[in-house]
Length: 114
Image (cartoon, rainbow, N blue to C red):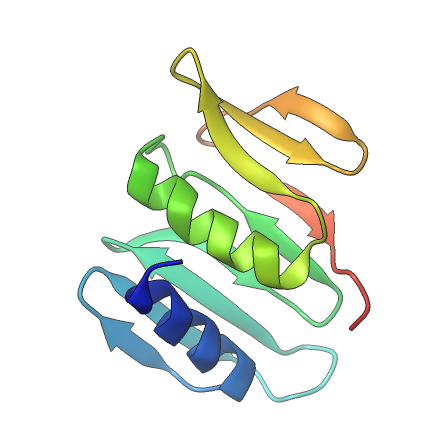
């Protein structure tokens, strides 16, 4: 995991806004059922971490950096999930199986209990 991704995750876990290089974390709402952290890469919204689920999107950019940021988030919140490219096509692998990703769509994944 890259240093920037460790800092991104630390900000999410601490409930703090953070900006570093090309990545931004914004906290929305209070620490209750309406709370969520939003992650942006180059200004594109790529993830929302809520109290019970994680929503991810490539925001139209199937790049190694976008996949790496999403994989850092998924590794922290969704057991066994990852995003990767197979023959240049984005793929989402979860405990339920593997599926093609539409780079513009959002995918909602349940968090694992800590």
